[in-house]
Image (cartoon, rainbow, N blue to C red; front, side, top):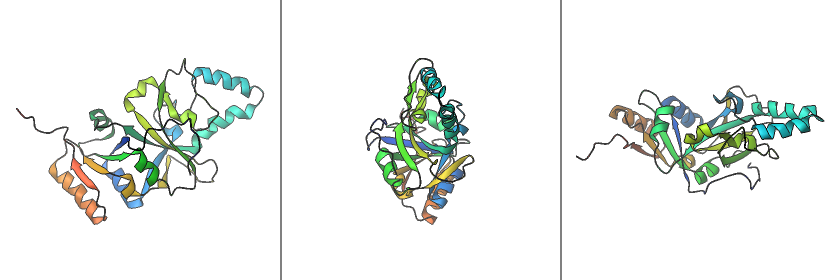
Length: 232
């Protein structure tokens, strides 16, 4: 179910989003029909789910009279899982470089509307989708009246990610989370089109097509044209 908060920064439903991943992760998603979401405190960026300096100073004042207040925010990161997507009208050369290896990755193209509908059956955890705000953690304030807010801010150094996030809060359940959690997703609704790595060989595209056919998916598949032949 989705949290009802008008302050969440969510683009329009027709906004195009992408996920770049390798074949093994993609195949796991198809076979399980589940979307993997990473535990928020396991991201490479240690600031994930934390606060900026102005916000932390305010929280410390509150925590002075309530020692459990700060402890809650520290432990809450272990109960929040995130699926990251890239907002872009077109493919991103940088995202291919960062998230795929050996010229054998692929990209899922979707939209905000498709994301919301594909995850609609998920009722186990409180869930939200929002675009990340990139700020100066030394100067700018992060609101904390909603527990989702700390996970919708990142440092300005990460602006190139242009990230939108699916965020699930599992604190109301007894589910055990190690590195992350798989949540139910409607694959046909989630994926509008699949793009094959621009530097991949033809056999790789044929392999992906064959896998999709054997699994009875009819999603459109194209090879990226970032490496297409020049015209002169």
